[in-house]
Length: 155
Image 1 (cartoon, rainbow, N blue to C red):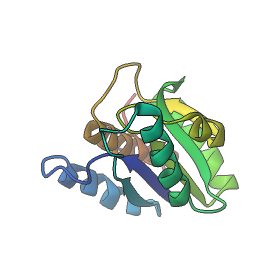
Image 2: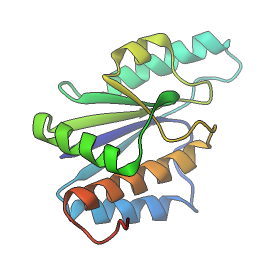
Image 3: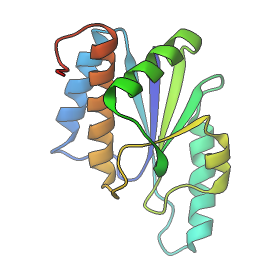
């Protein structure tokens, strides 16, 4: 399965990037390929709605045709890890590629919310983007470990 993660914000964090890379490497053992597309935040001097519109246009361009778009948003459905793994297992049976979207500091505009086939929440808390990237990488690995009867997840 191919997973593209489109994230608005800064491109790297020297502290967190190695951790993300480790989960990507682990996921490859389950034949899961993760690619990241980092969308630069729009000019902060622009009005908020204009920023959201600019970022949305770039996000839309980054979504591959035929992929299944999932928005991460604090208003989305909160899943436990077992439910997440069940959703991913079902998606992998019906789609070769999913696209997970992480909005910018002001979220995403309505067009992205309407485009998303699902909206999930990692937490009701507001989280820094680099931490969200790490959390989604870890949760993807955990979910695919469950799907493949790996030893990472414990009940």
